[in-house]
Amino acid sequence: MRQERNNIFVGIDWLLVILFIILVSFGWMNIYAASKSNEEFELLNFSTKYGKQSIFILLTIPLIVLILFFNSKFYEKFASILYVISLLSLLGLFIFGKEINGARSWYNFGVLGLQPSEFVKAFTALAVAKLLSDRQYNLKLIKNQVKAFIIIFTPALLITLQPDAGSALIYLAFFFVLNREGLTLNYILFGSLAIVLFILSILLGHMWVLFGMLIILSLITSYIIYKGDKIFLRFNWPYIIIAYSAVILFIFGTNFAYNNIFKQHHRDRFEVLLGLKTDNKNIGYNSYQSELTISSGGVNGKGFLNGDITKGDFVPEQHTDYIFSTVGEEWGFLGSSIVILLFMLMLYRIIYLSDTHSNKFGRIYGYGVASIFLFHIIVNIGMVIGLLPTVGIPLPFFSYGGSSLWGFTILLFIFIRLDAHKKYDW
Image (tube, rainbow, N blue to C red; front, side, top):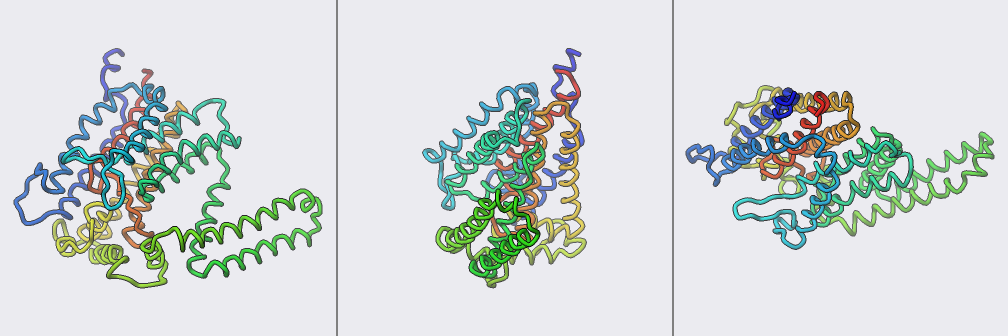
């Protein structure tokens, strides 16, 4: 038993490790295809994108060993401290961060840059798991909900201020975790309703949407009166007034935000996405070229390194946020489907292991990991195929970048370490 305790690989889920290796390897192949030029192939050439990614991948090995070295109880005991340190790393950006493309999101260490927001997700998931795993914690209480929201939205706010709204959106994924642990579904329903009203306001105009919503609320109120539910009206009329007021304020508020807070390129992206305007040369160029690149791959794809659109460098930043377009062109519908199936298998495995976890902390952290991965996969692929606006969210293990790769590696392998704990009494 003592020998097993000294073996950091005992009890780990090898299926997740194998899926990790497959996804990272296939991701590197597509980065190579998207960034290859005519120069001679050099695996560890730091001047090329694929060479840098090779080094980033090699550095995940000591990172994984370090994560597995710590006892699983370490992550539960020091979850709060790790979370606070991650927040300090975000705050430090406003003083020491390097501004790139208008956002102060990076620390610059010579040839190496680190983006703290990629690592904060894992430590926020640990902090949420630590909070919710308390036996006395009841998410039905408003004060407990507020505590959870503070933990989740504090890093989201700091990331938004950089500004990096795309990375901040990821924290909405934690609502699935909270719902799984007892938070009412109303938050997700109200959020979905808000998104629908926002989209309808852009498509139809805010006055038409307001008029329609007031008619719907009036019909509901009239039906209650018709049914003679006087007790309901007597005790709940303040809620009816609040409902009317909330709808009016929200619709006028979204209209104000859209026209006065959103920048023109943000409005253009929404309008191109919703079909209100066509702009394949400027704001809609990335999405148009990405869709064209994917569709050109057909069913079987053009073959590895045979993507002529990829070779022509027609898709800006194809090796990062738009890497899935390379998959679509060179590997086709079948290859793209296999990638998605591999991701779904990884998510299913994480959720399955979480459900069978005897420790509440490990279970909740597993839900957080699955939710973050799912959010990234849906938003990134949806963006690349033109179903969602461009928000700058990487595809796990595929998009180029050391921070992204290491952030997802930390997220996954902490869960693998926690999962190993349930099999062996450490």
